[in-house]
Length: 347
Image 1: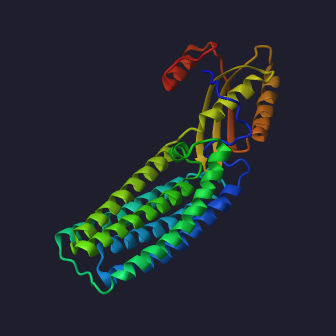
Image 2 (image 1 turned 90 degrees about the horizontal axis):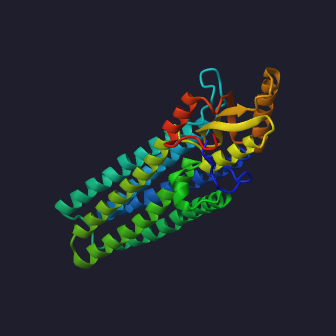
Image 3 (image 1 turned 60 degrees about the horizontal axis):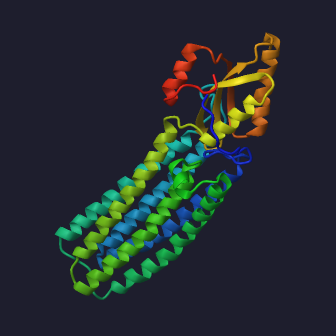
């Protein structure tokens, strides 16, 4: 198998895994609950202000908060259902439920947030404004209160993201591309979009007030819809990759390969396959070329020892399969070359 010159990362968990199994889950739940409380509160305020003043931007922001609240509920469902233990019908556990419900949350952002924002924007642009000139001040008060509440939720999500990226030695864009826990991504992106949306809504309301033209209010609503559409796309793509069987962090594969090749019974690693089966679990399949002097009895004992020691070294490895294979096997060489686009090295 091709060698990776990346530094050994054994002390660091890979993207998509929690080394100690549980600390991240508890923090993620706090993050989601805080975001839910903030979104419900600001959603009610935005809806009241939008109805009182007729502001399309405020009504779009109310839909934004409703979509985010729905998302948080779905994320809580995701966390709860993904914690179910493995059983006969699901021998690899229910970890991927978190990915499914996170995908539903991303769809909810689009359906309840972006779609309504586009509708409200078009209605405002091509319709007549019903905004009351004596009540405009309410919009600014509500937007300021919403910024405080959304900022509190954003701070919690950002702190968790910072801890994760530092521990994993990843940049924020890299973490967003290959998330360990999609619920953290969802809350951080939602809150980021919420703060940007508040600024857009404030600008639209101000321009409407200054010019008396509701066109600016409608444009603000459309921009909020585009913002939510972008967030929905990013989250959907991340969840899709996890659902279809995304591999673990390549740095983890390189570290496991080096570890296996350092074992006395192992001559070379033919192939390594991994799949994220949950936010805290990884499935590992290793095809290993054992030294020729190993007997059948010794091979069995070696496989048991390797399984046990791998779990000690990397606690996120949930299921491990070790298959004896020969580096000289042409069929296996072709399979690996077909998957990775290059033949095995050092054969």
